[in-house]
Length: 113
Image 1 (cartoon, helix red, strand yellow):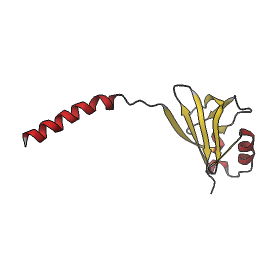
Image 2: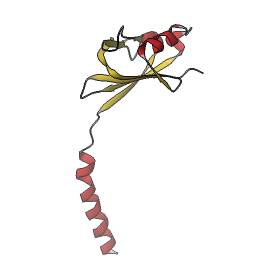
Image 3: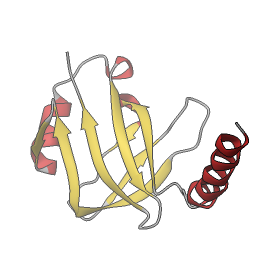
């Protein structure tokens, strides 16, 4: 019985340094479509607000940013055209994936029902 406990404690001690190495690399935000400001071009800036009382967060996008509408990847221009047709923008939500180390938005995605 003591051998099992010793082995368990040793495994736990070995796992602690690995758990301490985790760090947040990307953060995802769920934003109302009405609180999203898309960039004008592929290497511009995107603005969004995470709550009604929050200030706008502005960060850069790049040509590597993915624009997904209903699971389909497309260019920024087509993505903008698709979003322009949406009514009741405060009831639709967009997921914005922000890479913290690069300080860039890597993906913007919306699924319409």
